[in-house]
Length: 454
Image 1 (tube, one colour):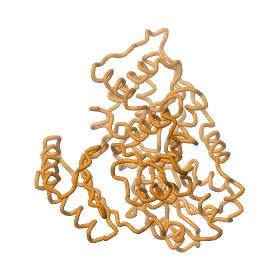
Image 2 (cartoon, one colour; image 1 turned 180 degrees about the horizontal axis):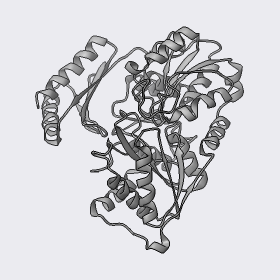
Image 3 (spheres, helix red, strand yellow; image 1 turned 120 degrees about the horizontal axis):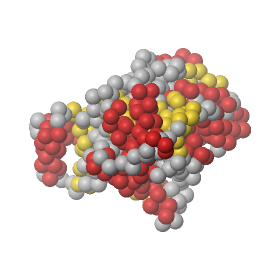
Image 4 (cartoon, helix red, strand yellow; image 1 turned 30 degrees about the horizontal axis):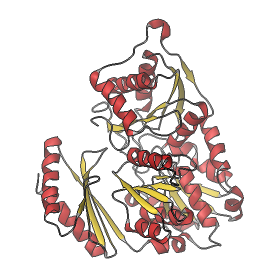
């Protein structure tokens, strides 16, 4: 697809992503959906209102009435869509820096659109082909209150509140000034936890930290946990569809580690887990230990959703899916990523551990060292040359490449993957091994190969 990447469309606001493009995407989505009503929502970014207005105008222009939800977490949009039976245009750039914005499209089942529907919408945009209404049939706009309240109530009902409350947990929460600010602290309080917060005021400039919940951005949360005797820290990205954790000592818990721990707690024999091609060996081992299958897809939520749906149609149970960046799905709950729910499931895991700290709970899944590097490129030509250089390197390697998404080389005790980002002008390199030096060396060797193509 030319417009939609691995998780919607994103770009620098008012440069790549313009009001005119958002207008066209909304017209195309409204045309394909052919729905009487469509919701529009956004995260806290400063350009969010501008693009939400453009989306609402585009939808009204093709005859859709518009429910304006305002600033809400992405999972709250999914909950609203499912309960109201309407699709949605969501203005968000998720974990990207504040100058970015983007669009996600959500179906009337509360799930991001599958690849085939996105392709139909994209084709409408590229062909400039929309079913415009005349002036008498233009859509009306209605502000909607209570979407966050309904989402909070629905999430709490899906968690063992009694068990979490009885554990008497102190939870430090870092919403990163994003959409989780309006929901996550409240959710964990209503689950019976004492809640401490940092970076918890909605602010699209992200003054306290960058939006992506990676170790270099979580110093405030780590210090808060370490100095407050909190049991766990929970951090979200800008649109609140991811959750990562900090242990009781203020140490960052790798997303692959928490994914493996949560998977181990819910897998049964003959279940399947769907993950991306950059899957950690930790999850591979957990699936093997539980006699569960592991299904790999190209990186990105859209691909994971599509494969999970396919498996459901085949009668396969998928209790958990996702990626090691904190973006997990629990399909029996809903086939969408929900940062607050991921955090709540981790609290259930902690409550069931009979007083064991987070560091002890995740210790069995912490044996591998993971490295991620990014190499920026200036334009498509440079990207293609860099990928050609990577391909040449892969072809000489003593390992069989997996080409599901980019090139993955498995060495038995270690692996390395190179692929272009679906959301940013970067080549991503991932490597993992039980030996930290080996992982660093694999990543560095691949980086040298990629940069030789500049």
